[in-house]
Length: 431
Image (tube, rainbow, N blue to C red):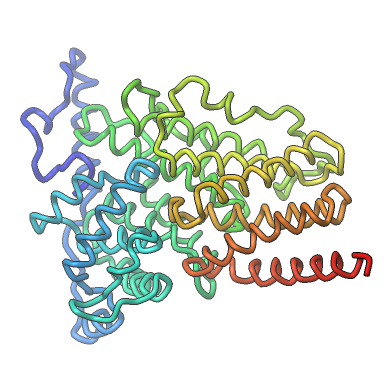
C-alpha cells in the first residue's frame, strides 16, 4: 500500500521510465531495482509459537479496529496531515483499505496520530459498539499493540514498517514517552538507510513518493532534537544522494515540503550552540531570516490555515531556540520574546485544538510560556502584560493537556505562576 499503489501498477511502471543507451548503466540500474524490491519485502512472515501468538493477541498486536473508527479517522488524517507530513499517500491507503488490501498495522498507525484531532473524539473505539475512550487512553492502547507487532516483525513490507514507525514516533506521551518516541524515529531512519531510501534508484516506480518519505523523516529528525530532547541529529544532509523535492507550481505537497526543508535547515543553525562540543558562550544567530522571507517564493496565503499556522509555529520555535545566552536588549533576546508572542497570537486566533495534532504544538506553547516568564523576571514584561499572556498560555495548555500528557506539568506550573502574579498585583493596588 505504498504511495504509488504498487498493487495496481500502471503499464510500463515495472521498468525504467526512460530509454537507457549505455548497456553497462542499464544493467546496473536493473540490478539496483531488483535489489531494492528484494530488500523491501522480507522473504516470509515470522513463525509464531502458540504462546507467542496468544501473547500478541492479549496485548493488542493483532487488533483490528472497527469500521466505524477507521472510516472516521482515516479521512481526518488525509485532510489534516497527509500533505503536511508526507509519510504516505492517504488517498491510496483509503482506497486500499476499502478494498481490504491495506496493512492493518499501518491503518492503526494512522489512527494513532489522527485520534488527537478534536474531530476524532466521538469515534475512538477499539471494538464495535465498545466504549468511546479518551484520546490518551485510545492512543496508549494502540501504541502498546503496535509496539509488540513491530518487535515481532509482523509487518512484512519494510517501506510500510518505516511509515508505521514514523507514525508511532509522533506519540510521545506516557512514562518514558519522549525516549520511546526518539527510539521509534531512530528505527525508522535505520530501516530507511538499510534499503537505501536516501539513494537514487533510477527507474523505481515509487521513487517520487519514496523521496517524500525520506525527506519527511529528515524533517522529523530536525524537530526531534529540541522536542524529544535527543542529543544529536541522526541524519547528515551530506550523506543524502537524493535531490530535494523541487518546488512545483500547483503542487501543494511540494510547496509544503519546500517550506519544511527550509525550516529544517533553520533548526540546524538555531541549535548549533546546544551541541555537546560547542564552546560558544554567545549566540551566533545575529542574522535571522523572517518568516515572510522564507515563504516569499510561493503563494503562502493560499495554504490551508492549519498548515500555515503549523509552519509559522515551527519558525517561531527555531527563533526562540536561537537565543540561549543573549540578554535583554540583544537582537536574539528580542527575537525570542517576539516569537513567543507570535505563538500566542496563533494559538489565540486559531485555537490550540484546531491545529495539527503533532508534538510541535504543545512544545511550542510550553516554550512560549517559559520565555514570557523569563521576560517578566528580566524586567522586559510588565506584570499586567505578563499576566494576560500567561492566562492565554494556561488556557491553551489546559486544552492541549487533554491530548498530550507532556504539557500537564507545564500547565500546573503556569497556573501557579499566574496565581502568584495576580496575588501580587492585588496586593499592590491601593486600598
